Amino acid sequence: MVRWQKIKDRLCFTLLMFLSSDQARSFRLTPIDEERTASTLAHCRGLLLDIGCGTNELTRRYRSMQGMAIGVDVHPWPGADVICDTTNLPFPKALFDTVTMLACLNHIPSSQRNRVLQEARRVLKDGGQLLVTMINPVVGFVAHTIRHRYDLDQLERGMGEEEANGLWKKEVKQLLAGNGFHIIRIVPFVFGLNCLYIAQKDAQ
Image (cartoon, rainbow, N blue to C red; front, side):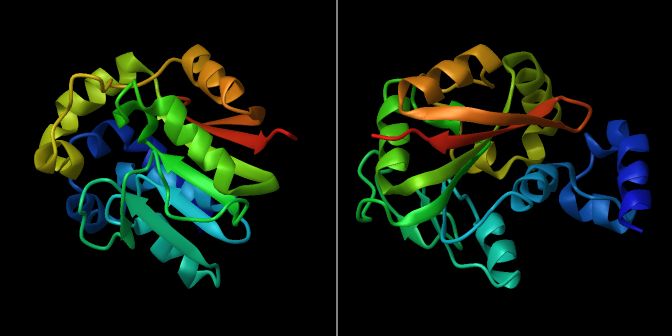
């Protein structure tokens, strides 16, 4: 059943680009914005912190699977557990087993990305993992253009000067390596248009 659902979603990908989440579900298709959540959930473990959680969909689903999770964001989204400055997370050192950053690294101002990643590393346990999903700038430009009216982040908050439509793989790799992470695996999804970066906290 799951396999058939994936086949339908892939065959209808072009249509999904133009549908809202509710419209996609009415056709019994997986909303395109939920693909990254589903791809990430399979790799989450232990106590989870979701940075840039938005409406907190990932943590809600993780909790329903018997996991413990906290979602934080700088913007006061309904459903977020903690609203805070993500360059200064209100958590002790080495608390979490997994930190996730879904489709948000490019929306963190470029001058603050290193600091947010350093904070993610600080609150991770030794051997903890960082999961990041990211599209490249070309895919991001097309997706943001087509799906602007369905993108709550863009409608509610807009794009700042130091934000980007996406980041190239080289940029993501450099950011992670420069802030104490090594990439274990890169998992492409949605025809490779999006990627999940599975990274681990380097030893001190």
